[in-house]
Every structure is written in structure tokens, then in C-alpha cells.
Amino acid sequence: MENQSQSSEQALPQVLINAQYIKDVSFEGPATPQIFGKIKAAPKIDLALDVKVKDLGDIGFEVSLNVNAKALVEDETAFIVELEYAGLFTLKDLHNDEQKEQILLIYCPSLLFPFARRVIADITRDGGYQPLMINPIDFAALYLQQKGKSPQDNN
Image 1 (cartoon, rainbow, N blue to C red):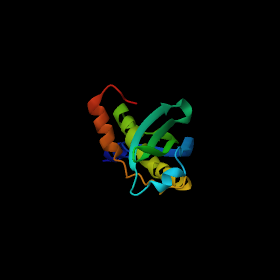
Image 2: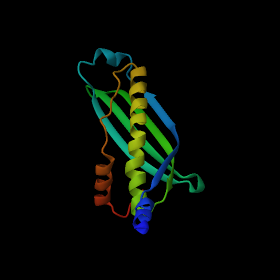
Image 3: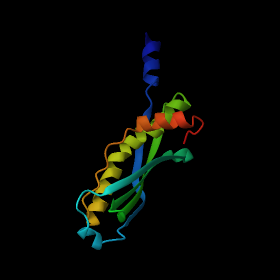
Image 4: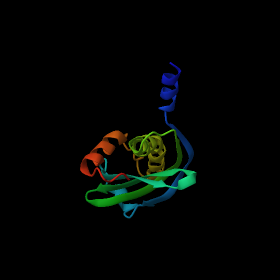
């Protein structure tokens, strides 16, 4: 019985968040303030999101969320916001590479996303627009979609 309880305890990986930070942020309002007179409805938003992982050796893994959003009003760019928001993570008690990959590409981005979302909302509001509230992201579905497209691409 002792061996079963020990092996079940060993099966639980640990994820430590050492730091969270903005690596890069940019906001452009190329048509401001003239665009304000043209806004009659919610702008069309083109959104792109990417997750990158960098192994930093002894200090852990850097997981970065790259968010790019462009708002269009009548085919004119109202604003462009770009954010690279990252976290430094330490992983312990991992048992295989697949488990590590899933933690780094699903769990860690899920922890970072609410903070990146808030930065985007704040910067668009501070730019004079309604806060851009990005819908929650299903990182597990994105991971599975990526695995289906290119199983050799782990990062």
C-alpha cells in the first residue's frame, strides 16, 4: 500500500510562477481623433494570439503570450495593439515530455491570459476607445489543433 501512495504523490507535477511581466507593448491610433466621428457600431476586430516557450535552463521556462489586435471602422484602422506578456515558470516532478509540453502550452498560458487581457483592455481604454475585452481562450483546444496540424512542432 505504501508504494501506491508514494507513486500517486510522485505523479503530481509542480508548477511555480517565478515572475510575470510585459516584454513588449505597443498601441497605435493612426486615425485618432478623426475616427471617433465615424464609430457608429463596434469596430471589427482582427485578433491573433500565439504562445511561445523558451527553455532558460536553470532559471526555468519563459512562456510568452503574443496578442495582436487591430480594430477597423469602415475599413479604416482605428487602433492596433500588440502585447507580449510573459511568465517565468519552474516545473518539477514531470514524468515525460508530453506532460511538460501540455503544462507549458496549456496550463501556463491559461494562468497568464487574464493578466494579458487586462493590459489590452486598459491600453485600449487609455487610447480613447471602449476597452477591448478579449473572450476567454481555450488553450487546450488550440494545443490539440496545433498537434493535429504539425505533430513534430512542439514549441
